Length: 506
Image (cartoon, rainbow, N blue to C red):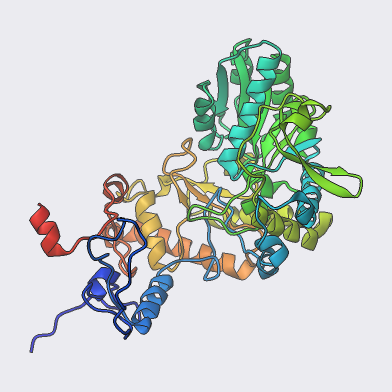
């Protein structure tokens, strides 16, 4: 008998779909026939079989367990995605977030029954204002991009309140990719500000463009090149002198938390990704939380509702109450139907209280130290475009110029990393660097784990230079080989039909 290769490798089996594993005409459990009873569905009864496959419990458990083994996770190894800050999530945070008093509450409960939750929100808000040096914070935004929207709506409300309709938002090339999309969504025209040779905002170009039509500048600091903007105070002064506001993308707050207060730099609004800076796991579409801190100039325009302490209890201040008081009396309104993201708040406050103010300072110091260790260990093999301008912050940036003579590119390198057992770094971002490779080790990685990553990356760079053809088809050892990613994104197959039925339909 001639044997054929099945595609299985050890315990990594070729995993079919549930519909291919189980038949729709059988059940995985022995059940007695259902007795015939009068229907109470009023004509809404199912007209045909539901079409779900029948499998036994062991089949189901093995299927999902095998699929889980094909996922990469922070609990398996380092996650070097730049800008995404995929760091370890302490189990303590998860345990506290699952306490019944936090996990089981409902947004429509009477306010007197959720006093503990409101106190936690108020305590977390105090920490966020203290760490940023800002007088006000909106806790309701659900994610970073949602926070950007919140900040820009407050800026628009502030301009409208003084009868100053401005239509342009300036976004530096080194800013986060969501910034121009947020500004455009708010109805603004977006214009780019170039980066200088150091990878920072070109201050002269920014000043030259400022004028009475500019509503705001959306800037990221540290920027997406992993570099701190040393001219930040000068930038804010110039923007304010032009009558505009400064929005700062706080996605990279992990690099400066405990060391730099954005309010001291002159920033007017900044969102904070709780799910990045304060350890909550993120990815796969959630969960997220993006509170926004505001300067005194924007505080009256912050969204509703907000938590306020009243004597020995807490209340949620709604629209009518806000307009009768001094705080939020010019609010642009609500961001969401209900207030906040409770599980995220619990995890973030758990992380903050575990570290304390001095511990949070060490978090940022260790994040910067780890990133510079990666940069220093690889810059003799990789092309590091801004290494000569000084140390980086929390992430190290490389280009694919070192591969230029091989015919390979950043995508080939990233796919080869999968064969080395690592999730690839962020690719092709920021756009100011050709073939960008953005590596963020975070503060939670040990020197041993960094050395393992560095060793694999150095080895790959050397082997790809010596034998480029051997890597063009990578990955070779993953459960799936290289896919048509463009086709998968633009023409996804999201449903399954039996081959016979699908063929008949065609």
